[in-house]
Image 1 (cartoon, rainbow, N blue to C red):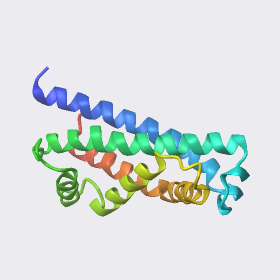
Image 2: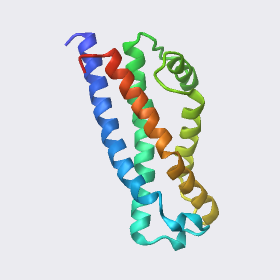
Image 3: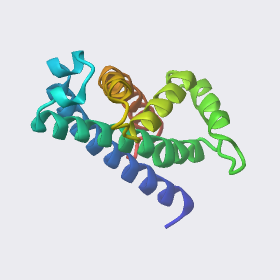
Image 4: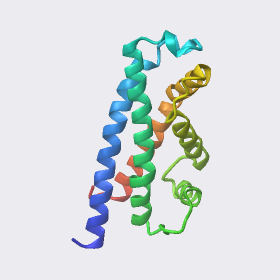
Length: 161
């Protein structure tokens, strides 16, 4: 395999992985978006089924965000010949935004912060936990939009996918 074929295989695998995470995230979001328990301040008001759904949502939210940032975006930037190992994530995101790969570097950073927040549970701070869960549910459509934007850019610019 030559370099271009390897890069296309990497992008193809990342696109597939991201699509699977998004599909499962979306299914969990469809269930969670109307949970009345998210209107309260206590996670104790959640049923076991709701907790499992929210666990899946938080897990897939983080996995999709990670896969987009660690696999798909770097592979697409390498394809665009705009990849430098020494770049910070913010440098990469700003260039990706300028190229039209992502709608907004600031949105990405905000979603990354949310992903980091939801990766930690705060059993001693139920209000903070519920706020993080609410934010994750509220921002899932934005993460899905960013995924769709990147996937569409890949299809337009790498027609052999």
